[in-house]
Structures are given as C-alpha cells and as structure tokens.
Image (cartoon, rainbow, N blue to C red):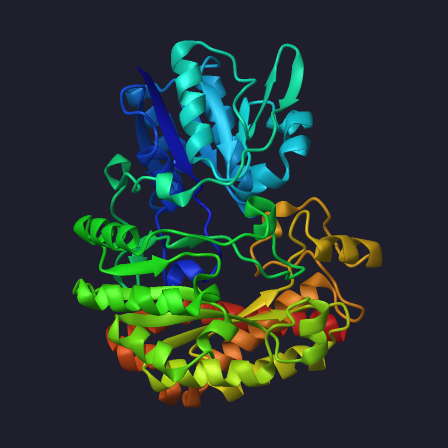
Length: 478
C-alpha cells in the first residue's frame, strides 16, 4: 500500500475569507474514490495554517512520509504550489508530486515545458476521481502510466499527454471522505463551522470570461437527489452548520433544484444554514422557487450579475440575462430574507471612472447586501482573454497570481490597473460605510453579532483603505 498526502493552497480570494472559508471538496472527493486497500490518503487544507504553511508541510512530510503528494490549485495560487512542490522534492526527491485543478488542467502543456514546474511529475487534467485512482494503482503496482486517460507526465523520455478522459458518470462517484482531513477547524461561514456540497457539475452557458467549459466541456450532469441528501447529512455529521452549495450552475435546472429544496425539508435538514452561487436567470424564475429555498434553510445567494448594461452583457456573451431578470432575482431573494452577494464586473475595455461609479449605483439601487466589485479577469484559455490580449488590455500577461478578482492585471482605454484597484477600494469604502447600508443590510438583520464583529474587525482595514485611496488620489491628480 502507498501513502498519499493531498494539499489545498493557503491563499484565499481577498475579502471572501472575512465571510466564508471552505475546506476543499475536490480533495475529499478524490480521497473518497480511491481503493482503500491500495492507497492511504490524508488531506491538509492549508488555509487555517496559511501563516506557517511551510513549516506545517515539512512537519507532515516528516511524520507521514508519503509516496505521493497532490497539489490542487487555481491560477492565483500557483506560486504556493511551486513552493510546496520544492519543499517536497528538497525533503525527498523520490516522492512523486501530482498537480490538479483548474490551472493545471488549463496549462498542462506550459507546466510540463516550464523549468519552474520541474518539481511536478504528474498533472491530472479535468475531473480527477478516476484518474487519481488509476494513478495510485499504477504507483502501487509499479505499472506504466501511458494508459491512464486524463494524465500528463514527464519521464526520462520526455513529456507525455495521454488522451483526455471522458466525463464521469456521477452515479459512479462515491461520497467525499471527510475523515481524511487533517485540519478540521478554522473553516467558517458567517461565524459557523462550514463545509461544501456538490449537487451537479458543469454549465452549458457560453460566457466569454468563464473557464468552466475547459474542465467539463459545455455539459451539465447531476447527482441523484438521494446522494445529495446523503452528502449534506455527512457534512452535518462532520460538524457543519453552514453549507455552501458549490455547483457551477445549480439553477440551470430549476425544477430539479426545487426538488432538492423539497428533499432538504423532508429530511429535516433545513436547520442547516445554506449558501449557494446561482444564476440571475434561475433566481428570477419564480417567487415560489425562492420561497422554497427560504423554507429549506438558504440564508444567502451569490448572484453573478456582472452588469445590467445590455451592451456589456453582450460583450461578455451573457445574453440569457436581462436587467429585468436581475431586479426580479434580487427582489425575490430579499423579500424572502435571503441575503444577496452580487458579483459586478468592472474594468471592461471601454470603462472610464464614470462607468465604474454607474456600476456602484446599480448595486446600491438594487440594495445588494454584499457587493463584490470584481475587476475583469483575463482567465486563461478563455475567448475574453484572447480579445483583451489582442487589444493590449492585459498589463501583466504572466502574473497569474492576480487572477482572483480584486487585483488588476488589466487596463481599460481610460484607466490603468492601479486606477481600477484604487476606485474599487473607494467603492467598497463608500458602500459599507454609508449609514443607509446599515438600514437595509440583511447581513446585519439576520446575523447581527457576526455583522458587528466583522464591521469592528474591519475598522483598521477601512481606515487603511482610506489612507491608500487619498494617497492614490493625490498621485492621480498630479
């Protein structure tokens, strides 16, 4: 039997970790789908130990001494992945390192060819349950890797990219193994112990800025509802009181989502606090659906609003959504006591400062409980990235660590990346400090203790933001 140690990265999306911090579900799913007679798996989510993760990784290597180390990371986390891979190889060059997740899937060619990634032996492309299981079997048995679909690797003969793996039948995927987690505390949602659950994979929409299709193609696959309920119960039994439904687009089939809400209520799981990311189109479908969500225990929803400007939605190829849909979706949610976190994109090629403040005003008029002003991200391998590169709008072409939505590595025709960051900070400061926000914020009304703890804890950051804003304004005026 071999031993495997799986790491998620210590970085988190800025500002998000103030509200929610979620353990990595993908790694738990890998751990739940290996052959336990072949591989013993442990998971270390590094977010709670992010200030000392180097020492923690080394400590685990010494105590566990794995044969295989797995690294799951997105583009903005790639620098930590490089550091951890180096720590592993410096400790014992015979330990194999495998990388998976969005960035390795999108950049498998570049990673194998780059000397920066020389410490990574294997890359799992796409969803990894079956590929990881076959890789652990091969390592245990000493067999070749050439027949493992979805695997890229390097050996003495060069770089190899095996054929892609067909999308998995979700009926074959077992429940995540949450018992494999070594760190079980430090993950919170609005102050409560938190976990995540997946009910489907994929999305059939054609948004230019999204890279989901590079993971799953344009597909939508669903788990059986009984399996979803079993997963929620397992997360609850592991201590979760706040559960994030992390599907790419759970409301693509609104009738199925309504059935999930019914099943949660029937199973008496609606005492759990649920949060989901959902489409505007799905949430505007009917009042009945949103009422059922509230009955099922949903306390918040992240809406990818992006914009209510029709020409900008057209530019992003998000044409299935209208501004009327957005108004209805936000109203239905707020009328049922469900907080709205609204994702708004700023920094499109034609944006000037006035356009950014128009986006701010849209969020304010809608009474978004938690506005998230994402700076346009040129996600790897997307159609939007190619367009921005052709227009010369990407400032830091290879600075993938900025792909988290709050750092700018794009410019507009009128604003630099620094301008975008400065104005975004000013927008947050103005929004959250307005006394009228306190009156309509459902976060304050629903979770007053957490709200004031969050607000008071952010006073130093708000004051610092104000200093930076004023300094940047002075420079800008010069």
